[in-house]
Length: 292
Image 1 (tube, helix red, strand yellow):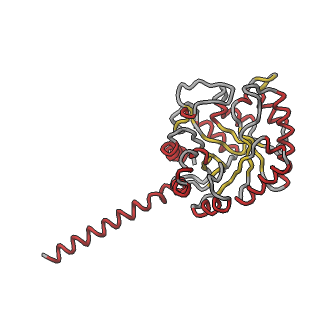
Image 2: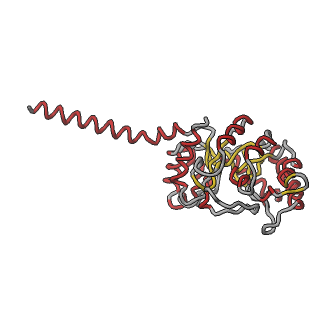
Image 3: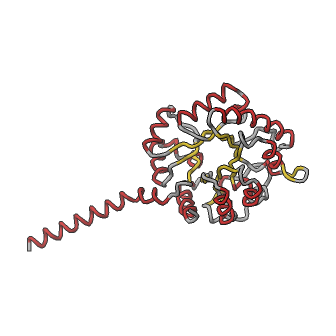
């Protein structure tokens, strides 16, 4: 009888160890489910990261991300930040550049130094400076000059410069839109674009059609979705709580992803600015996995 009890306890102990091992392996399984093409803009977790920088970065790695866009070091020195990313198997593929910094040679050097240290390939500007909601052809012409000049310097030093569209560029102009002017007047050797599909859809446009119209100029996508029934505008503004799990909102993801893949886009960066990003982003990863 004693042998039977001992055997039963042994079996129970083995089962507990197996179950514990499976639970510990869950983050690894989650990691394996994230397509290599899919990354995340760390701004999505701007509220969580400052509370626990190493812990939150570990959680992001646990979601399966191997690549991110830079959004600051959150109080860490650049070497500390780089070490933390390396420890979690995360590569910073892009650093940001303010529009004003692009016009300053010293600032451009700082941006390139940061990109070099982090091992980034891309330098991205996320906003064009303009007065209030007034964005017109004079802003475009000024921007073209700044982008071409900065982009040429970045390219000379081995970096690709992208502009992340933000919605106000899609206002009508002549027979097209201001976005057409911006794309057509910038030199594709030095300046290309990251399409935020939300900010193309929000002012009333179809992201899939813009991908078709300029198949070689879009080098990356920001992936986000808009809550059903959200009113749009051409100002580049929207309540962040309108960001919903991709695939549950208004955007036609099937058409967008089909054309983006056909165009050869390599980077699909999730950006979820809502207060629910920690819950929604893993669901978005799961949804996007069906396309790869």
